Length: 215
Length: 210
Image 1 (tube, chains in turn blue, purple):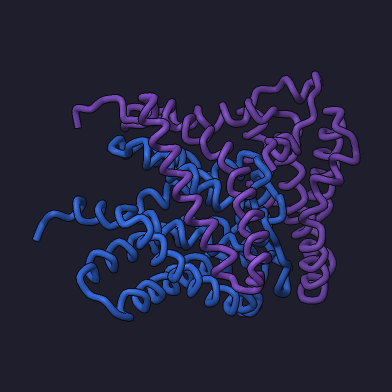
Image 2 (cartoon, each protein chain N blue to C red):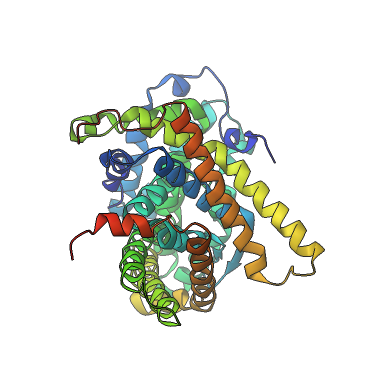
């Protein structure tokens, strides 16, 4: 199932030939950020010992900071190099063997969650550009939660069902262990993303405005 | 942490037959094992395939210690799954599930143990080549990979610096103080990298007609 999206992720960084050198730098460095966050500290939690790391934080932040296309490229680059054999998955694992393990679904889910939250973040930031107050952080948090529930948890459960042959209810229970950490990480991700957009106002917003000039 | 030593972790230099087999063939082996793990229904077959792959691994001259090190990260999880499924589905099924995962892991580590990092990265970069007529640019792709690799030590160093300074201010329990400066300095680093590339005429799209 996953072998097919390999060449697809290889292709994406190129497809947008509009990306300039700064975009390439951001894509490459955020891919490194996801890798570095996976290596920093891994705590095995839950029934199956899938480790919790700062990695999901970095993945969600990649989406929130870069928007859908560049986030897809950055997380795709990370996955591609990890699958090619660099020891950059959590716990220093690497290679295609990861796809056979119980955490395969989570790893694939990162790609889609980052893209989805990036798309939602671009929409939210553009629509709430003139408003101040609590609306923007609340919408961003909602977007991050929806993306991580649908893609990270959804595909994570699927991965445990396929690879560890758990039935749905058991995989669902095993996955529940990650929810508390995920909620905390998403709150943190939104607060950091807002600070990032404040520190670098043109990181995503100007792209949103130029990308959507229609009234 | 400024070395690239972590990138060399899995490769064992050698001149064995397996080292000389082309990369795509090894990739096909891994792919085949991945497919097989869904098809094999008998644990004895899985055990035989696993034994064969372990033999292949040892044939490359990497040694049993390397084999153990390749498998060790997945062992705790596999023990948990094996015990749970033994209780749920019985011993033969549990053995088959665990052995099939091990088959994939050992097959993948044959590839990484006998292929140098440079060859692997060249292989990844060449994945972009068939997409050239859709606007893919293998050189920019390879450049992005290279920037990512040299940025990993920067990110790890940023985490350590920030942790030290948070501790100095008594904030080592505040997650925002531990993480936010890492992201700020990372974005700044990414932009400096982009500017440095642009200043050298690298990384810009080659055909400006669009």
